[in-house]
Length: 345
Image 1 (tube, rainbow, N blue to C red):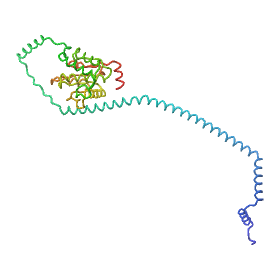
Image 2 (image 1 turned 60 degrees about the vertical axis):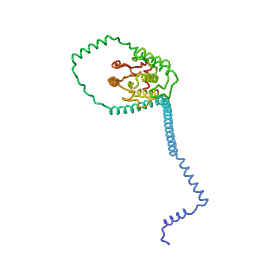
Image 3 (image 1 turned 135 degrees about the vertical axis):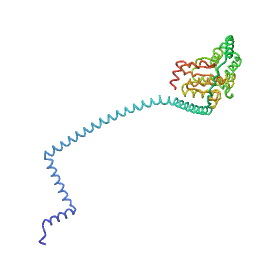
Image 4 (image 1 turned 135 degrees about the horizontal axis):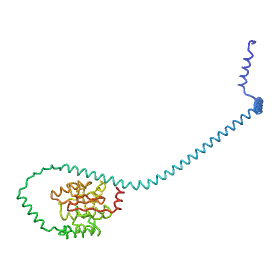
């Protein structure tokens, strides 16, 4: 027992005291000791200075952070206002432009699709019925033939030529009876190639002037839009069908696919036609270029048929070779109508 170290005995006693619970008096002594230590620290002036310095720096940092946050808040509010203003402007533009133009875009796409389908069908039909051109045999004329030609030419020169305005005089009664029918109520169930719509007095005056004053060759003022011009053309086709039967073909010239599509739909509705009635071997052929139309008209005359040429009001000029054909009608548009047509197409 005498060999026990006093330090080890002290440690053991300390551990034992830690494990034992403190009584009330011991707790009060500990609190007093802590207060004394804190009081001694408060009396030290260096500690108070450091504490005030830290508090001032913290306050400066907090103020700086608050200022930054306020600046960022104001910038975000300005950005939100600008974005809201831009959004309202974009909404107005969409309502004013896109919605108004969507219908015109849809009509243009639909018209071009119908024209492209018809053009491909016409191309296949013409390719199937393509004929080889036979080289003509050139025979030198004899002197007797030349004498007979001179005599016949002299006889023709002596015969008086009828006036252009008298071209349709023999058929005036039939033409005017058609005019009277067109003024009546429309016959929506008429046979194909018969007019299923009615005309007004201005349309009749235009047709009367074209038939009996111009002899079926000349330009007439447009009726104000393409739909009314198509209706007048449909009436003209119906009358010529009564006069010539299947011995004539209508050739329509318009320089844009959308306009040709509008011509196709209008004539189908006014005359009760189908898609098969449009093509090189049908009653109506649509052309986008005047040289193709002139070539087709020459072929019709070579086979003994009659070409009837219709020129859209949007065409600025008429090709000179078209003027040689016996029957043609060109619609002359006003500047306002041309401007409106350009806006649409």
